[in-house]
Amino acid sequence: MNREVTLPLIVDDRGALQVAAADVSKLLRTLGGRWLRLVENGEEGLDEDTVAALTIELAKLADRIDVACIAHSSGAP
Image (cartoon, rainbow, N blue to C red):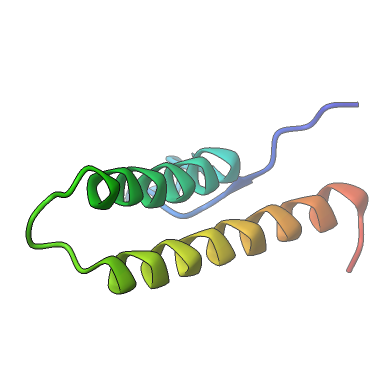
């Protein structure tokens, strides 16, 4: 069975609005990738080491979200 897992990252006053965890992890990876492309294209004002470090941290966060969702979907505590 394919179940979509959502995390209540963004909620309204009633707690109804949610963002899918897959969308959040995709956003984090996309952001890092775009930063890297800007550096590769010689965008001024971006420090290559800083962008690389931030991209790695964003990917780690996305991985943690994905692992938590997998654990949730499999019923792991």
